[in-house]
Amino acid sequence: MHFDKTSSRRQFLKGSLGAAASGFPAIVPSRVLGRSAPSNLIQVAQIGCGRIARDSEFRGILRNSDGARYVAVCDLDTLRIADAKNLLEQAYAQKFGVGKYAEIKTYRDYREMLQDKGIDAVCISTPDHWHAQQAMEAALAGKDIYLQKPASLTIKEGRQMADTIKRTGRIFQQGSQQRSEYEFRYACELVRNGRIGKVQQVFIGLPADPSGIEEPEMPVPSNLNYEMWLGSTPLVYYTEKRVHPQAADMHTRYGRPGWLRCEQFGAGMITGWGAHHIDIAHWAMDTEYSGPVEIVASAEFPKKGLWNVHGAFHVGATYANGAVVYISEKYPTGVKFIGEDGWIWVTRGDVKPGDLAAGKPRIAALDASDLKMLRAGIKDNGIHLHHSPKNDHHLDWLTSIKTRKPPAAPAEVGHRSCTACLLAHAAMKLDRELKWDPKTERFLNDDEANSLLSRKQRAPYGTDYVLA
Image 1 (cartoon, rainbow, N blue to C red):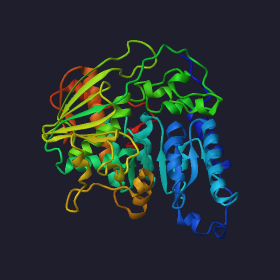
Image 2: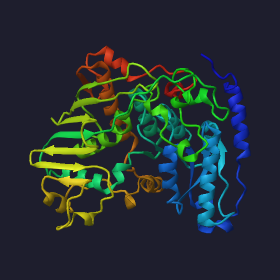
Image 3: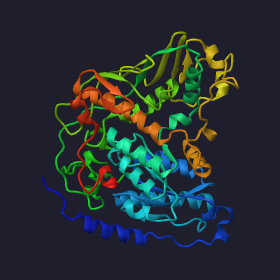
Image 4: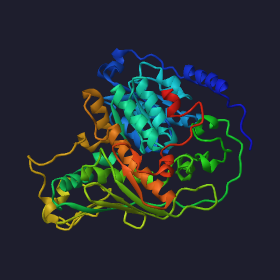
């Protein structure tokens, strides 16, 4: 295999220092900005400027620019750095006027960026194998964190991350934005308040990923630090469909990246979408700080080709309360709770309380065996779950930064949701029933299964390296 010898650690740091220095902003006097002066705003930096950052984090922080501003961006691909800087500065110029915002700093190494004491918080939208390490380092640097899901590549990493967040006292929001959407919160409140009786079964539908053909080795693009992009995972040759598109066309450049379909960097749809819907099942069942106790699963895995995450699959996870959660690509995408007294179904949709009024038709995104249970509402003395302001997950995070109160999806919750996904993945791999202890976070009497709780990390990257 051939590797680009120019991406040594020393050369990378030299280059990143240069990039950081060239990105220092012009000073904008506070009298120009008034109430929007930097001292009155949460100063946010972005780590990872790809598809998810553009679709989620950039939009979330920009629409809340009265209380927070981007001041820096970081990526291992210089094309993405330039695109992000241009996008944000154009948005601020259009909103506030030319010269009435600080120039966006640029970094190629997030570790350099974390040393900037003027940055209050970071959004992390990198590939899954970087999530836990970067969240830990951000917390140790004193930054509050918004982390895209899933929480981690492995259960061990997730535990290390959650413990680090707790120890440092940082505000952490997992990117489980469904917790801030009305239809999901309301469905969970209805289940928590016993509207369907004791929960017996939950059916979760997720998409499935296709396999791919073998892909040839390609030269590493000069704009990409591929060695660092691989992070704690093994060195493998570069090919574009292992990473992300390098197209000149902006739409194609930010299409769905190939790494999502490579087990080296994640577990596939069981963590990709599973982290969302399993989190909702946990929230409704009040198991968000524990998890299943038994897991059985089967799955089809490609026998060849670059893209090797699971295809068709079926999972059954039993919880201590007796409920069984079934997960498969064969079910409609969403979550269906079945109890002794009826059922509730929820999936993504722009649902508003008024949509549930008497006389209104059924809603595809929020339905029940009896519409009366949806229309009854939650009494004042009932169980009310965390309500994000304006149903906005990023605003919820920014509000928590100011109040120092927990947000909708704190680190431990994100870790437990991801853990349930990774338990399902372990059961897929072993193709047999596994017994799990949520307190010790170990499989019972199963050394083979416990060996899947972690992966060997390639120095000098990884969560173990952070804690060393």
